[in-house]
Image (cartoon, rainbow, N blue to C red):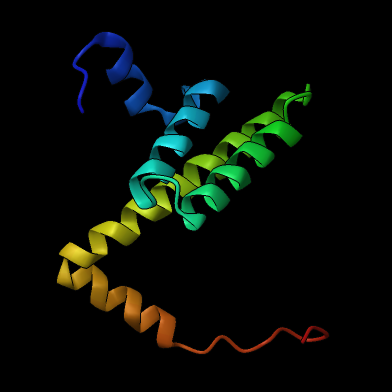
Length: 110
């Protein structure tokens, strides 16, 4: 669903200008898209999203709030990239190649 109004264009040009409530609603919509109905997967995803937002509900630090919003937007973007890779063979190939590469562990960490 596309809404052609001034507010939508502004928020889409800069996703970080979205409110926490708008991001929460986007996350819940994505869960409905991924796991419609009342499946175990859908319930688990909704519970996870709600818990993350519930735990951060009293956050007052602007920098922390921006980081949390960025994390949520990154999650939404990653899912959209994942879904688009199924339709675009070049993206799918690049993602498979990236997954197949072995990243050596850093010193001191296992």
